[in-house]
Length: 475
Image (cartoon, rainbow, N blue to C red):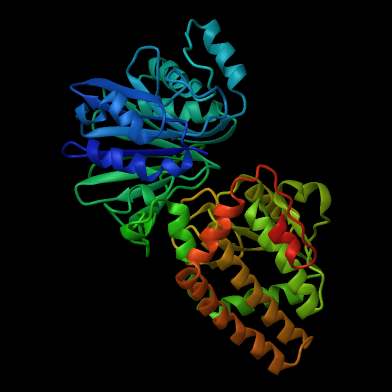
């Protein structure tokens, strides 16, 4: 996972671009970099380290330009190093690219380009993109056609943004199975892998879909299908999040901030439209089998819900890790698959949903991130409304997911008459009490919690034991 961003404006955009990169640092801590077009040339600066460190090393404040791209990297191909950092530059020094994802056939492409005289500097898969763009630009004489041709050669998952020194007022970007969102501003337009990158500058967004590319100028944008070259009409959406939700708000780090946001996230989850909850329960009641899928924390939330469904609704709903779904699960037209995902972009979960749809199954999802791929790829989606979660460790999002899943359990229990209505009402009222209990712990018990942490913090080995409801927590 990496964070990519780009801005094209009518005046210097470097300070805003730096802020976009800083807002996406949670997506990669290994290295970062920026590239801008300045006086018809590329000015590229990058290095290893956190964003603030590289700011000092590379003097980002000296950059000037109205068109630029930025990247924060979580290393996959190639160790963290300056040469492996993004942006990557074409051999002629005129094209710079930032990339998120994995180019599955990069070794084959790299060997082909080397045979044509291209020289590679890094160990990354990403460097094949600017190399291909240069090759096709020289061959086609048109950068848009070079973009389309390059996309046609890449296999795997990718989202990338490119700038070319001879096109100082344009950003070129493409998406295939990795998130990419355009931000529509007043004096500039933006593109990034997450809304939080530019939310302090604009809340108006356009979501790119797979196999689409966009050409973005300061006052306009156009989106096309990469296979056909046809224009794709895009609706401009307005997001409900605000810039303050994406900041630390006085907390030392996002993890602590998001822990303290749990009561608000829970309240939002419990305020989700009852009609959406009932719609998912009705889908389950009409299905021959239902699976809950997720990865990591969302799998554990699903595993807890598995116990709730059995005890309260009287039905076994297996929780399956998304990466094992295709290997373990029988799927047909009578199947319902419910995905749980904070980001809505979890690769294995999206792949599992695609597999299920191909088999004729119906799909639903519980998602936190606005406008993510999953929200557009399922039959029914419930938005958590927990706000941006930037810490790698999930807190408020998981709490919110459990609350929504519990509400679906109760709705299904009412439909199946597996519990008396009075008992269902009592459990539902108890969920409101949980909000108060969580707030009480956070407000009144931090000293007690800190005391425990200080006492046990020195232990190097931990063993977590649980059964039943406590197993997911132990995991």
